[in-house]
Length: 175
Image 1 (cartoon, rainbow, N blue to C red):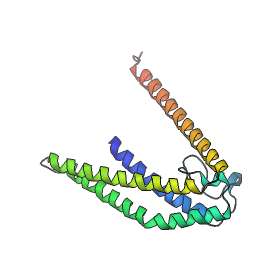
Image 2: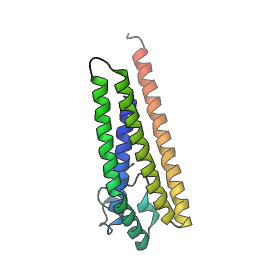
Image 3: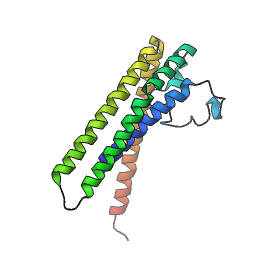
Image 4: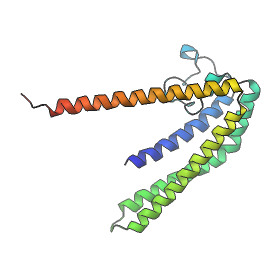
């Protein structure tokens, strides 16, 4: 179950990264609430992977990002299609009666291979975009990522505390 959510999460992240970077590379959008473009608020939005909007890219950099996204679009679509097919094959292999261990293992291996290919493609794209940034932009990006990770860790700790509190309330004997 946890693996399934991880696969779905990776797929969603790649789709958001690809779509978000491409959308950012387009002409600037009119300012929305708090000076942001429409739909670009909150945590983990379309720029979750690279936070490009906060790096003040030049027009030339935006054009280069646009070109990178265009070059990688078909590969990403193909990988996402493979991911969906591999997830379906895994689900079917798990549900088949009678149980067939070799079929489940083969389906999981295929799914892991696709996930690895997707991670490599995502990392390559991020590295290519990172290479387009100035030293100052790279430093800001590293800080933005560290801040995002710290916030995620804090949210996880808060969620863990709430879960523990809930479990303690449920464990108390009813008077």
